[in-house]
Figure 1: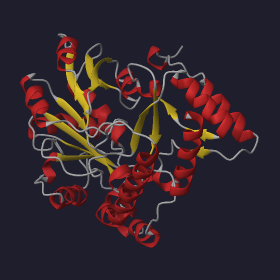
Figure 2: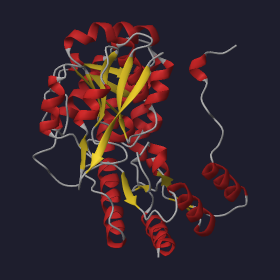
Figure 3: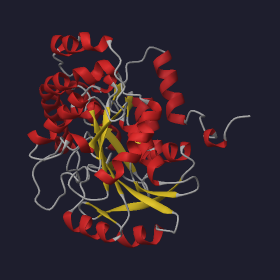
Length: 370
């Protein structure tokens, strides 16, 4: 009766079942997977945010496929503050970064075509591509005291049906940035690049060899939004930065949906300004928690983002590590296979939880590892 695109395995895994039993029993869990900044004890300028939404202009509906001009200008100013020149004409607003992916996939590919996606990375692309009738093929990131593209494997993954390469810069969860020499190589592949830059503002120190953003690169679609830039996922606003040649098609797609809300568009300039201290607080939190983690463990090299990865002894599988940690110590972490790590055994920790929660969780993980 229903589309085959929805034939996903929705059965809760062992970790989810154990977590549900713990919470049903009233057990306090130290959640080291928390990725929602509004639930992580981050201070927000509530009055500024709420007053930004109280705008009389929101009472009038003015459909604009690319997004209201003032809102696109606000996004352009955000890039200007980062030293980047991005014309408002190159910006198209969406309701989220996920929707931005959907628009770009619709623009670039026909049903049955393929999109190359990174492994490991956030487990979303297969679902987004499937909803567009597309297939995903993975290209591996390899670790040698840092994460690098496996160029041979990526080149081998390209087929006549390949329509784009997805990059996450910095990657989630590895926290690795694309390197300049890697970008030079990618450009020679002559395929559109779809670059998710939602974590680009969160870095752990400068590096001249890395690519901070691809907004100035031709044949590239750069995605971002309020969720990470201002720590406001509930406002539901993202954007695409693309070249002039792509804008006509993107505008046609957006005109079909008109999904970006009027109130958040009118508020966008003020929300981005209010988000600056929020972003600073999040950056301070993740840096401090990373420092705490490094005093106890040696996480894999991480350059930015909100996550850290631990390689743990293979005395047990990573799912067993996560289950035992939750069962015996009431600490929740994610096993590496949630992010398609290619081998055992890795644990992924969010760096966003409150300081004391994170510190206590790391201490309990240490006891399990001893």
